[in-house]
Image (cartoon, rainbow, N blue to C red; front, side, top):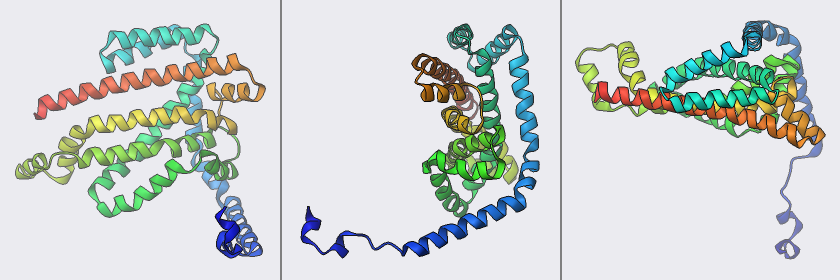
Length: 301
């Protein structure tokens, strides 16, 4: 090796003093624990409505008769996609999930993913719009989104658990942190890609900034925004398994238990159910996005 012929000081990186590093870690940990003691209860109370909404939706999904839920789901999928093939595939896939005994766990997972997606849209849409209107804000937010997408999910589970403990709300926060960046990025991208000539025409007709945003930019950016919603749903489903480590139930918990106990069949079936949900959401949202794109092309083209 090259280091055999070089001085040791050139081969070993000069790290900081170990005692100094230990003191720095202690200071940061002590400061964060003090913050949790001071504001943990306040933050927990502020997020209590999310707990109520999640519990209500979960009880609604789990308590609904399966035939009623399937009928409503089929209607939603058909209205969004206008595809009998996708609707029939949804019915067959959900029926298969029920036949293998995973209906209730699937409803719990669907409730979690639905709430996380709604929160991601509520957070991501306004931030994406603001980023599209300000280059300075975009340059500030982009590094934060890079960190959110590349930081291992197990790392930001630590502060979430320290503040909120074990339960559904901490899992929900972890899923949203992981899933919201695509919503922000693609909303920003979609609005920035709107043709300048269209915006100039809107200005020529005397449109106010608000009218230009809601009547021109957002409608033309909807296909890209729908792609962001699609990616947010996919990432939320991917994060459900990790979030099961801190108390989120449903299919993710079953997968985690299958890994711990080496139950291949249990893990495969629950993984299959997650794949089925992902495909249903993906095909439906893609078909809806294509319909919106064709409509905007007809209206504005």
